[in-house]
Length: 331
Image (cartoon, rainbow, N blue to C red; front, side):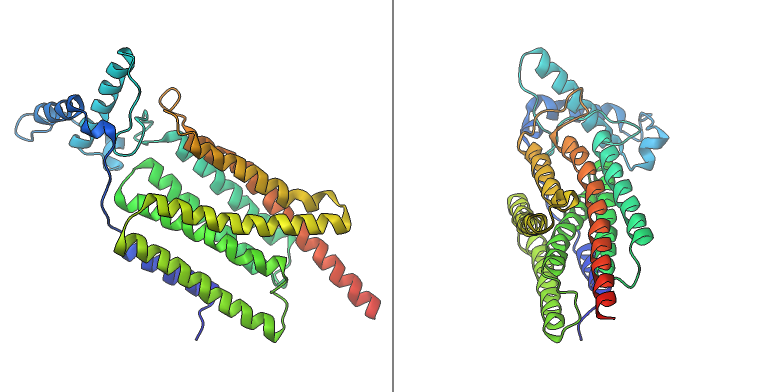
């Protein structure tokens, strides 16, 4: 028996959560003797429960900051300030740049921009429900896209608030699910596989099983074989390129037939997202200790999201108007 999309999603999410644990990788900063010495001295002088340990602010404790982690954070910035003063480059610690916290959040601007994406998807979902009737067959695919995207950005905000193994992997697996679902529903709209014919229904079932299997295999490889950042990035890029190619083809075909402005919106979204993703290649030390290429990438995806939901609504309304005209003509 085939699972419905919602049941498949819950199964895959449960599978991913059950597998959450894995090794962490070190960075150049972790190996600096001055950093290790600083951390050791700080822990010895501030974290001994028998020697009046330095109190941790409440809002830090609520975000699970411990005394050794407070020492780690403080020493990152002490070492960074000394290196900058000596004309040495800023280095990463534990795979991350030394960001300045805000209210205990490790990467406050990435959190802020993740929330911005979440709000954009939430408003997009509301717009879908308000503007597209529930009877429209593609609406359920669009709603599931919105739900998955909201979950993705919740996980992103949590991860950038506090970087643990669990929050990191939830972020990666949620993002992977969102990207793969984008590839899943793209051909359904582009080739109108939502139309109720036996052949199309059979293909959608097969396509659903294939995409679900790819996601399970992706998570299983990362968790049970090797936690590979390069592979994870490559897999997401390839899947993203497939769906971007489909939407670019759709946009070009639609515009060549109708010459209406809104039909080029998917092409604009694709170009915008590709430009935003290119920021990841820059990977520079954070400006003012707060804004880096990754946070700017999150900022750059908010605009395309808003435009994308406008397109989905416009496309659905145009499709419904065409169906209505066809029925009137036959009548």
